[in-house]
Amino acid sequence: MTDFKALYNQKKMTADEVAAQVESGWLIGMDSAIAQTPAIMDAVCRRAEGGALQGVRVQFLLDSYPFAFLADDSLDGKITGQAWFASSGARKALAGGWADYIPNYYRDCPRHIRANYDYDAFCVSVSPMDKHGYFSLGTVSSFSPAMIDKAKRIFVEVNDNTPRAVCGAQLHISQITGLVENSFELPTLPPAKLDETL
Image: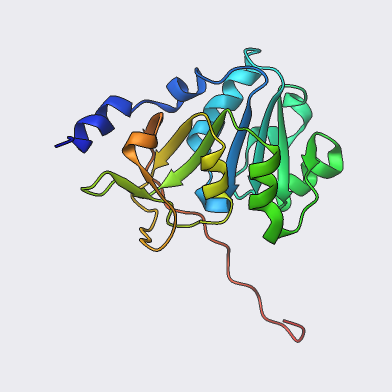
């Protein structure tokens, strides 16, 4: 019988250790919003800031974290964000010219991913592992299965605040290249102020 906890411990690493595996020219995939991996992306950005990376592309759907490659053009040419759909951070980068937009219809994205992209890595935030060795991609199940199918490596951030959803996409510890434990409260939007229009 496989000892999944032992396998988990073998694959546990720091965000900097994950970032150290990233090479120039890689295409990295992420799904949407709070399923993205802030610790891993911050570490990758630090490597790029230090001059170790060029030409890395990060595809994502709806940014929710303040990634350095979207904040300003300081990483232009080193890391380029590629948005399937854009939130406020990506819209600023798109308007500034240091990020790219992928035109699409949401329903067609998994098909386009499987037909047109091969990812050097897929990064996603997951719930803690269960006793059978599975992690839940609790907040997403949109692009993730397609990106998982097309990824050479899978890096996860295990966050005990990520909900477990057994009806959605899951990853097994045997599929994981490396994992980072990163416990933090998931971001939430402030409540809207009601007026005559809203």
